[in-house]
Length: 167
View 1 (tube, rainbow, N blue to C red):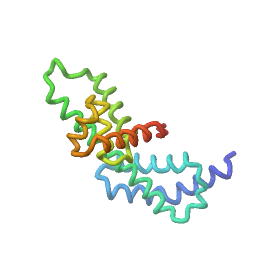
View 2 (tube, rainbow, N blue to C red):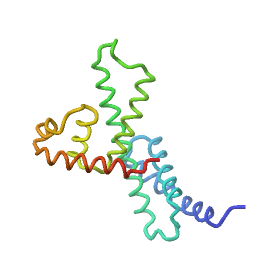
View 3 (cartoon, one colour):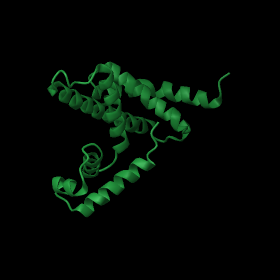
View 4 (tube, rainbow, N blue to C red):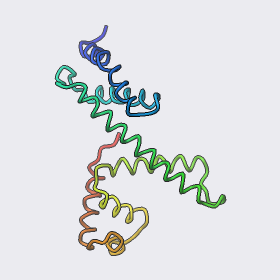
């Protein structure tokens, strides 16, 4: 026997899924991506434990979630493309194995998700420090800011990383 909550969710899904799929598909060229995005949107609604009866503008709510998911998918693909383009420039003997590439892509995606929401200058300073091993003085010169600003950026990035709750 289903619970009243699952009945609400089923009704909400039935009422809005077709509309959301068409809405997303107009923005994406790939039907499979549109279906994935629509499904992920409803998964987020489900995991948020929001009473769907309390959503006053369901289409606006769903399209906002879907838009964020589409942006994340685009950003992830751009990151992957940049990484693959870089790998293509490496001499054959230095190129990582397929398994290493997969692990590195997963790590890059996690780093990107972790830093999501930070201003570009803060992300850049953090990556220069943590990935490239540069000191604050070098980072300040590259970014054209003071060393004190770099310290502030690093504090902001580290606080953000510490407080983030990734699934």
